[in-house]
Length: 414
Image 1 (cartoon, one colour):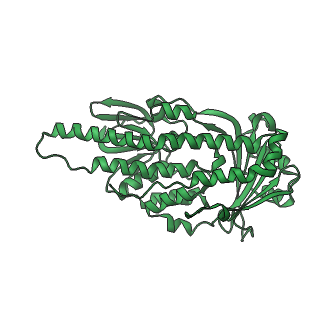
Image 2 (cartoon, rainbow, N blue to C red; image 1 turned 90 degrees about the horizontal axis):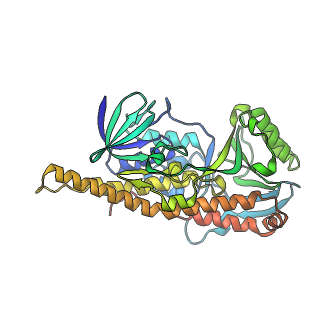
């Protein structure tokens, strides 16, 4: 069976749903192909910085999301070896003349909010893309169930192992030689922690926790595989994951131990941290023949700047605006339909080239900045450890705030 739609988005995660909503706000319909059977609300939380909230404001959902989160006010940095504080950094003290905002948001709340704003039928579940084929001005998207979708544009928002990125010829994401263990704790009543990031560095490990609302606490432990010596065969065993994190934080504080011990085993996960090489983003095809990528399909990165989801939201606004300018241009009445079709094809191509030009350097910068920040934070080198405790905590925070001070603009056509 073959159906025809103007815009196909592969992947129903943050980038896919936000791009679809951005297009909807501008009067364009899209079809989101999601391989899972329902909305993918797995994962715990994500940190949304200033740039993300500007994008969410553009989508018209920021105010409702703010009601489900707390504004982060400070970074408190401790030594993971001794548990002693090394720095207390108020975030507002680092802002310039522009508005600053950072909040920890439950991923489920964000996805459900995006989904609720989309027209019914926008997402097609159990739709795994197996191949993309060119057919004149159109693309044929082949699904695992044998159906085919004929479309003018394919947007790959299908994550680190993107089928669309492979079609474009982008190299696979590489292993950063680091891993992350994450957990989430739901307290029956208020947990009592102030809205701050509590971070511990040392011994090749970075541990931290922060509240996302009055009852939920999120924690993370990222570590250098060569230094921390964790058994990779145990990465899917939540009991061993919890034991490992407890062993790395036993000298920190009883509070940290208590948070870890009360974390349910089904609220602990582990993953290797991958990234796309920045020169592959700069030199590779992130768009070609009216096909492009966004979100993790474009710029998988380590989580050290907290920009994975934020940059995906940036992508969605810019891409929606570029495509709307191409699709909403009035066709000429003095030429044949096939010539109008060719002109539309060329407008779409130019729109995606414009999107690529805007996102290429920004994406490479974020990937590089995240990798270097993680290297500094988890290094076991004595010199770097000394500098980190005395100076680098404030410097790396300035980097975090600097890259977050980005404005993707409104959903308005020029």
